Image 1: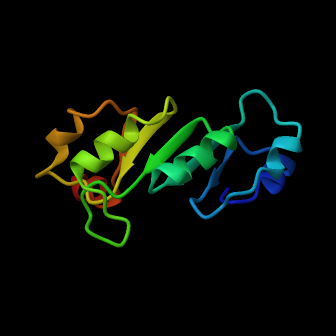
Image 2: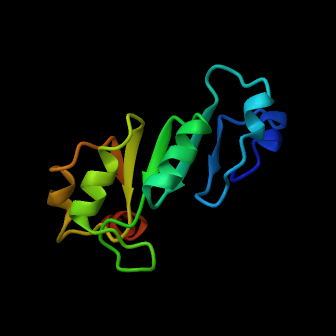
Length: 120
């Protein structure tokens, strides 16, 4: 479920994803079951701090390789991921050419739709 904690709880889902633009802390007033995961995404330090206040368990930081409007690059990504104690997941442009660089980061994982689609 994306961006609706109340509905995710009502439907008895396992968790919810809070996008970077969601800055609300309203969900902290809800009674959340123990195994319920709240994950979120961020593109800069301010958004990381907001996600920490939202008590997310994992944070997607993007974009590590894909050169779009939120492009960080490898070194900015590495420095930004060190600014939080939350589990970090890399996003953005991960492919066969740069997958080895992921191992040089202290992250929990990565998400790469195109990379996994090509493996099929």
